[in-house]
Amino acid sequence: MSESKDVDEVIAIVIGRAGSKGLPRKNALLVGGIPMIAHTIRAAKQAKCVSRIIVSTDGTEIADIARSEGVQVCMRPAELAHDTATVDSAVRHAVEACASRSPVVVMLYGNVPVRPCGLIDRAVEMLRSTGADSVQSYYRVGKTHPFWMSTLDLDGRVGAFVENRIYRRQELPPVYMPDGGVIAVTRESLFTTREGEPHAFFGKDRRGIENPEGAVIDVDTALDLAVAEAMLSAAVSLAV
Image 1 (cartoon, helix red, strand yellow):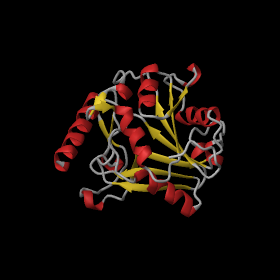
Image 2 (cartoon, rainbow, N blue to C red):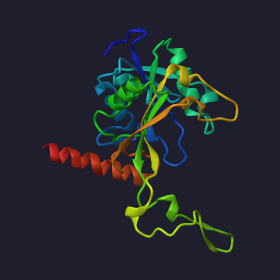
Image 3 (cartoon, rainbow, N blue to C red):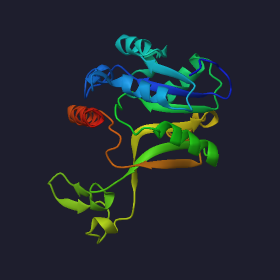
């Protein structure tokens, strides 16, 4: 992996904000024997397409972990480190701060210790082969399909979120949720911002790649952490 600033590089920006109200220090917590964010850094290193990795963080603990993994750190300013700061604004800051001219930017969340091998390469390959503005990974929704969701009023009365008469899961129309595994965008799309459109950076031509449900673990709670730990332990056991 090169630290070159060649225009043909694919740069991966790993997002690792220090603050987390749901699970304090989550990006630095040990899972599978190593800090959580190290799993994402190593996934980026294993990607054949990635030529440069930057960790964007506001935390010294996370920065130290990133440096111990041998990657560059971009310290995030306070205005991009609070709860309402957007991920894309932090990624734009990191790209500009490291003077990258890469036409392809891969956005990776540091709180995802489990993702399929080859996922990053799949996303970048689709981005390039289709000429799309962005590619994001998704999983197909099962029992939590919006057709089966309900509303509850203040008195506890139940209403249908979507009126339908489908009772078998096999008959539900396919819908998909982003799983947090990877987002690949063109530089042009990333730097496209429009007032009132928080997801403008995805561009007009948005593509998706599908992962099996549960193939990506996005850790936000102690339960997510336990699931990730169990999956990584199982993977180690199978490899022995």
